[in-house]
Amino acid sequence: NAGVTQTPKFRVLKTGQSMTLLCAQDMNHEYMYWYRQDPGMGLRLIHYSVGEGTTAKGEVPDGYNVSRLKKQNFLLGLESAAPSQTSVYFCASSWAYNQPQHFGDGTRLSIL
Amino acid sequence: QKEVEQDPGPLSVPEGAIVSLNCTYSNSAFQYFMWYRQYSRKGPELLMYTYSSGNKEDGRFTAQVDKSSKYISLFIRDSQPSDSATYLCAMRSNYQLIWGAGTKLIIKP
Image (cartoon, helix red, strand yellow):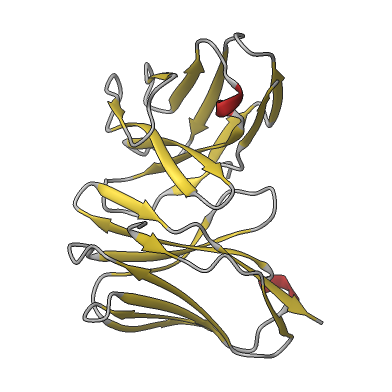
């Protein structure tokens, strides 16, 4: 009963490097989300998807790209990492926009 | 000013005490209100989900919504050390979900 699985759990990058974070859900949810969580700021929505092949920008999309080629997977990419992108990244999914979101355990990303 | 305000704490109480956690908000369009619990190095997990004003109870947890005052609360009765976590409030109007920054709760044995 995995729910939402995020890989990797930890990563350290140098400024300018690129990487992709993977989110997989096994609940057949249509909606998927990427958030970042920073101290004192709460969760902020980066991008979201309302179904396979669709993506949309959230509150803080700059510097990130996403793709949803399969319904169960949602990828978050950093093309050229910056220290300001040091954060904990959470993926979530839900049946519909107004239904509770289910979260993974996060990816801790440090950009040096 | 943030749309959702939440005292970051930490809030430290003895085991068995009644805990009150609160959020205030400024957007009167918010209709759905949620409380999530987040343990250290884990993702948030849903505790309570309410739509209307009033109280909703689930075991030791009670969620209260006062739309006229733009104020929501989460009460925890008979608090346990396992309740030590960060509690996040979240609220929605249409497609937008806004989160509080979270209150860290510590229950002392």
